[in-house]
Length: 422
Image (cartoon, rainbow, N blue to C red; front, side, top):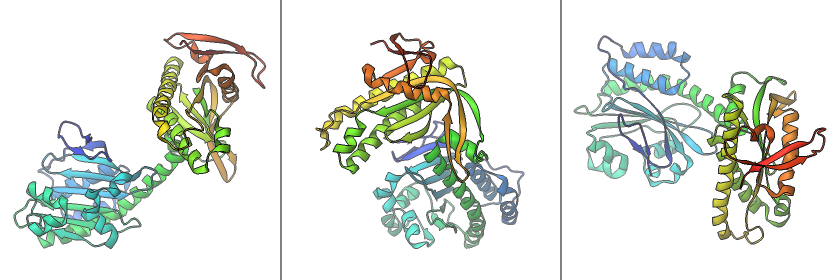
């Protein structure tokens, strides 16, 4: 399976490479008369204000083409720190003028396409690689060279970008007769040394963003990156609160080896979290076998409630699908199925920084959170995988079943609990 770019200029990428977005097409503005010196000045001054790498790169390509460069294909590759990605890349060619941004998954580094790519050799040696695609020896050395040759490229160079990450590389190719002139290669190399400073800046921002998103969630990470880092900083919001846990986790922990428990927890959390994220929820915390998430009320409580229920149903279905494959695992006899308990409640919560002055947690607190946690205990006694309070159930289109009023520990009023009609 391949990930496709928009149809305006069809391109496809390997399964481990995910298309993100596209910019362009880049068109040569005839009245522009940039010189390489002008581009150097731009890189030293105005380019520093740009925060989006794809915009910065498109601007750079536009300028070097306006300066008369013969570059017909340019790619930028940067490494990153991310649980599932090895890096990002941007690909531009003059055939369609578009610049694509893609995410490169971890699986890429184990593929033959990567192991036999000039990028891998540059990471190992730090040397510039230059080849003439039309020569048989170059085509035999790197498979990518054969693709460039079939596209009519006559010269190719892969240039490491100075910085902390050796995976930062820029490549250029041309269809010009005779390839790149040595003077142009020298001018471009000089520009790329300055451009490398911007790449490093963007790379460090991306690493910070990735790390925060992985540990805090995208919404909380965005708030922290915008400066919400003081203790007590946050806001009161209305939200549908999701609380879930894994049934029989204590028994699993006592019976199974720690490595097996870790495998099951990761499967369980991936099932829950992917369903929540797919329907607009935000995961805030994993606690042992429990997960806390919210669906902020941005377009009405009805929509938030329906999205939360859709996420819960999808999570339960995904867990059931996993259980069909689960018997193949060597420790499945001890616990033949994985089951979750999910509770949905609605209310006003405080979303923000809580903790000690030098060790904060970005989470939600409030009576509604406590009530949701108390209702979660009922999933075991009532025997339902999904329970809702009336605050959520009253907004649903599908039929619900009243499962009684229950006294919750620490809550004065009895709470009506509902499930989906079976």
